[in-house]
Image (spheres, rainbow, N blue to C red):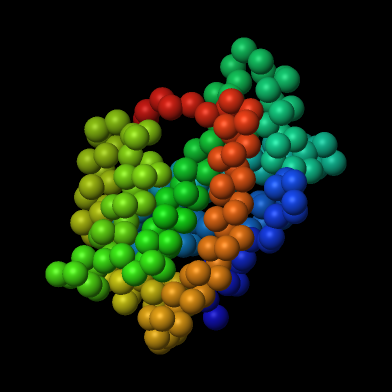
Length: 209
């Protein structure tokens, strides 16, 4: 079975409210996605995502009844930390987490759309580069960008990556990509909803690290 389909995100309700517990349950499996890219290649993103998930979870567990949705958390922190907000607590953690989630979304969508280097069709460097440049690069200073440039060069072959997504099973490329497209439906809707929430609440920051 596909690593992605084993841990699908749920369909959002009409108001696009994201249930905190269900989101945390689904997103807790995302760090393992980066193992498919190689144990050390994207360890920086994996570590960052893991840390941000734990920060959001820590806030949620303080009062699950109060923080039913992610927006409940962000709005509560805006009220409690007016001077520092949005550069505080779970609001800041979710801001960075959504960027890591967007990186995954763009990478998988690029593969699902058949984008590739015609001279090296079994490399995913084109897809990973697109994902990094669109989701993360603008928030990174030149030192971090150089770290990721090295990581991009070490990205695995597409065949090995898709096999890892299939939990080591030998699966036809198109069958694997069908699973990827199925996973992306609710996943993309969730990531888009988080970005929309940050825009509506004016919670987005553009500083670099």
